[in-house]
Each structure stands twice: as structure tokens, then as C-alpha cells.
Image (cartoon, protein in one colour):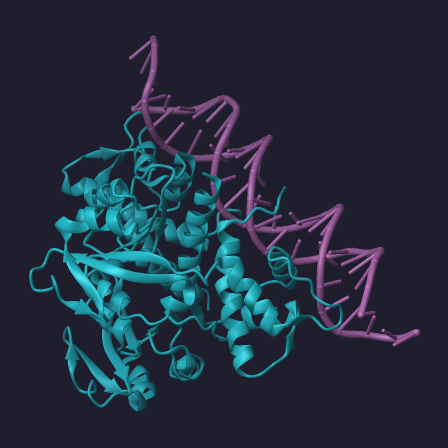
Length: 211
Length: 211
DNA sequence: TAGATTGTTAATCGATTAACAATC
DNA sequence: TAGATTGTTAATCGATTAACAATC
């Protein structure tokens, strides 16, 4: 079977959902792979293949109902069932993520945070309580949290990753530039900003040199 | 010629730089593609191909000098020459980025910010002044800034993108989920967090179902 | 109906990995 | 020297795009 659910497929679905939600807000009833393609710069054939994975069937000449297609995409990503997450490291980035309002619509709920700064401990940020880092393992264990957001300085990241994995974490959203070593039953998603920045600057420079 | 400098190549270099810097801090004198490979989960052949693009030559059996390899990588990405950037939208994410200390080592300098909240205007954040959004076009034009970081709510993003492009912006680091329409001589790097989150949650779920 | 759109199979494209000679 | 490592060419792999019959 060649149509496994790859990383790249998973990454496209939030884009479909984003466009479908905005079409829904506008009150549009039907849409087609070709229309989505125009909004997203994704080939229409690819969109059809992706959407087929959700089980929906479109109608030739008409396309898909916006409502049901949106629901199918949300269900495909299981965004209705919020996964509990903890956030480790309440610095600038950690703060921004704790205050982020979009996660509830994207399958994630941050239920607890950890830091080692006494100034921050026992405070609440956007109603999420900050615990001392020493309690991390116990809290993760008791709350059965499976997802961790890692926003500490890079020098601590491997050690903390080891601890959280021991406590039962299965997925780490890694905002540090450190490549983490983890057992194969743990998923790491690197959200490193430097590669993105390098790609942007590099391409702009290429273009400017060429012009 | 098959070895163009692709997006993926550009994205790997910051990882090489990160590891090389930490080897340098540890005082290690030589390294090899195979060693970097172990730290990064990138195939050693790929690393050799990438490094060859910088013009360095390794020594069989010994590898590369850490210092000179690091310099070659930094030069390859032109990270010594800081590109001026403006930041548009001083919300949670904007604030976090304004306070980010790592950009100076990664080729970027944020020189000015914009917002429409009177509370924020004329304040300084990490010594970067916040101007009213109405002045954006003029300031970008006068300072000849070519890179913009877009951290506004998504509903404003296309309009603001149009304006900044008119004023001379060539590269947009887009932190909003909106896919921007831009002329082909403008580069957009999407830093959308939803696709990353979907990939993480999707893979964790896959694993949990399989186990 | 005619034609736009679907869904699928085949072809292409590009990135990654394997194989291997060269070399210090 | 022997063998680890380099750098390059060839093979593989997987994702994207093209082609096309089916259908409302």
C-alpha cells in the first residue's frame, strides 16, 4: 500500500481546515479540490488524494460540501479530542504559547507548566499553573500527560527530555535547537526557528543575486 | 547541474552550525561527516555533499577542522552579515521574538517593530522601538529593510503583506496560518505552528494505535 | 447533453542512500 | 602499511504531477 499517512500529509490537513473554516464563515456551501488548490498552492490531484484518505466522496461537477468536508478533516486529525499537554520552560516563547488561544481548535490543551524560577512558580498564566521543575515527573505521571512542549534553554533540553520520557511523555514539541535523542516509541517534532530563518534569508539572497 | 542550493539544504546548515559550535566549545579540534551524522540523524553522504557546497576539503582519515568548517558553514549562510528586519504585530509571539537573543548569531537583526495598539506604540521592547502601523510603509522604505516578520492576527496578514511588499520587503517570515499571495520575486517562509502540531499529534496517535 | 470535476493509475522528478575508488 | 574517511557516481525511494476514464 503506497498511501500511508506520512508526515507531509499530516502537515497539509491543517491548511485545508484553515481554508475550509474561512469558506464556512463566508457561508459558501460547496468547494472543490481545484478551488482549495488555488488558495493553497497545492496541486489539485494531491488534494484529492489527501481528501480521499478521510473517506469523503465528492460529486463530479460540484465538488464537496464545505461543512462535511471540514468535519471529515477535523475528524481525520482527531482535533475534536483535545490531547493534554504540559509546557516546560516559561520564558518568552513559553509565555507566548501559554497565552496562545488557537490550540483548543487544533487538538491541544496545555494543562500545566513547569519552570525553575521562584518568581514564576505557583503563578498562573492564562489560567495555567506553573509548578517547580522538580515536580515535573510526578505531575506528568499523575495527570497522565503524553505531550510536552519544550521551551527551555537548549543546554537543559536533553536532560529534561529524558526525565519527561521516563514519566510517560510520548510526544515532544521541541522549540530548542538541540537534536534530542529519544527511544523510538517517542516522537519529537522540531520547531527550531533557525532552519526556517536560514531558508528565508538564503532564498532572498539567491533572488537578489540573480536579479 | 543537479546540486542546486535547495530549501532542504539551506535548512540543514543551521544544524551543522549548532553542532559545530558545541564541539568548538568543548575544545574538539577535528570532526568528520560520520560524527556529525551521529549527532544529527542525517546520512553521512548527505552531509559530505552539503559541506562540499561550501568549498571545504576534508582530509581522509581525519575529517575537518572544527573551526574552519564552522566558519565555512557560517559564510555559506552569510550569517556574518546581519540582515535588517522589521516585526509587524507585537502580540505574544511578536514579543517573544523581539526578546529573542539568538538572531544576532543567525544573520538577523530586528531594527524596528509596528503595532496598532496605542499602549504599545512608542515603547521600546528589548531596545527595539514600536511604531504605529500607519508609519510602516514609510519606515520600511526609508530604512531599506528587506525582511519582515509577520506576527499579526491572520485576518490582517494579506493586507499588511501587500503594503510591506509595496514598500520594498523581499522576504516575509509568516507566523500566521494564512497562505499569502505574493509576487514571485518575494519569498515567504511559513512558520505556521498548526502543521507541526498536527504532525506531532498524528504520529503519536499512530504509534499508540499500533502498540 | 456537454463539460467540469472526481478519483485512480502511470510518469516524472528530486532527494536520499548505497556503492566504491581515491587518499592520507 | 592498513584502514578510516573523503568525495563522487549510480541506484533507490517516495512525493508530486500528468494523464485519463468515469460521472453527475
